[in-house]
Length: 419
Image (cartoon, rainbow, N blue to C red):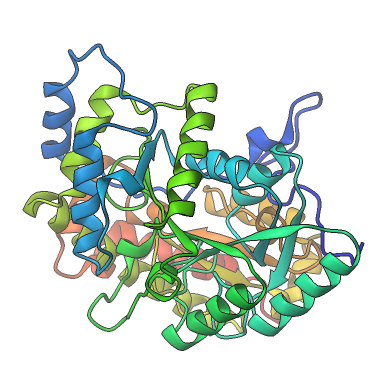
């Protein structure tokens, strides 16, 4: 093969050391956490539905479907309920969709840690394509076309391109023209596009950042996946929705996906479905919390970004999410003095000093030898729920002692690596 089919990237090792005899997928890094208490309005909705004993049907019920349609309509994607499916989190839906569609999968490098295991669990090949210099989340279009050509020439069967319009791990948003070029390359290569838009509503400056969906550019050839834990629900309430193309092929694909969800018992819990429908409708309290949290994480991410640049480290300016992706290769000499020579060692060393998970780039299908880590902003908001709520409501969150102290600790760790 052409050397692009990687092993199960992003899934090896524990945070500190891998336990013998245990599957490595269990030690993959979790998504960056919000660091904020559950919104009381959502707690009330869940509590009201707690007595519901009946499960949701496979693919979700009418209330979630209709709320998802309204959610997408507010973002310019007209959607019919019969083109929607819901599941207990994005991994369950993606696994069902890939199982239904078939074929090998093209992914950007780096990519979310949980994507590649989904492909591998199905016995398919994952081919990682470099991202453009300007952003993550999408493959370089020319590299995509060349990789597809080589893979097919050597007997591979790429059929799907998985990408993200607001990326974990790089925290970037692809410029519209670059996203369009990637979509055109996928169309030219005959690839079905799956757009993970879970972080779309965590953009730090929504009035300055234009986020488009491949479903706008390839309406008959793209599906949209949204994990509600990205911005609307707590991580412990698993729910996600999937939008299929409104075509006969899309109808067939949805039916096959529901078959897989049924066979695996991947159903949304009834009380969670009620909270999901409520959150998808974005009442004032939910929308307000999501907006305030995105702005807060953006401010803290920007401050952490400044700490990195001050010592010569590299990172794309964070635009979305609760994290940033740091490239510490310019500090390689200082890290070598600490006995750190690759991303796995960097993960352990950095995490021990910050007291928070800092997964290395190898978790995200990046090169092991490259000294890259994902830094989360959630741990910088405070150590207790009370501190985090105070941070959320502060006029100047960066001026709070607990936030300033956490940023200073990051800066001190980085400064110790500078020559």
